[in-house]
Image (tube, rainbow, N blue to C red):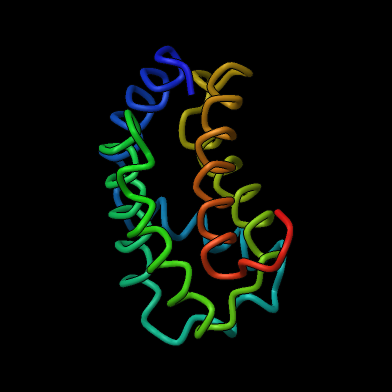
Length: 140
């Protein structure tokens, strides 16, 4: 990612992270389950707990965005844990699409193509790392 893309992501996250975690999480997961209802069965915990986990992970990723390779091991561990929950490589695409949609809705008029490209590259980098760790024999 370019330095400009990193700044765009950091600045946009500053805006989003002050929004109530429950609201952002509910918007994200409602959209995710609308797009792929079968994913709802993968979540056995209270969704409010899941909302916090989502926002915490995104905050952590943004805090490490200057060098995402620094968190490769943690991303790999997370991906491997997700296999046990039933996550498949194909799920990463819908999660990415839903994340971008949520970011766009949250940022409203501040969302633009440049920001979309930056977040897309960030998510693609992370998802490829996770898929390669959890499913080393599958193409990403």
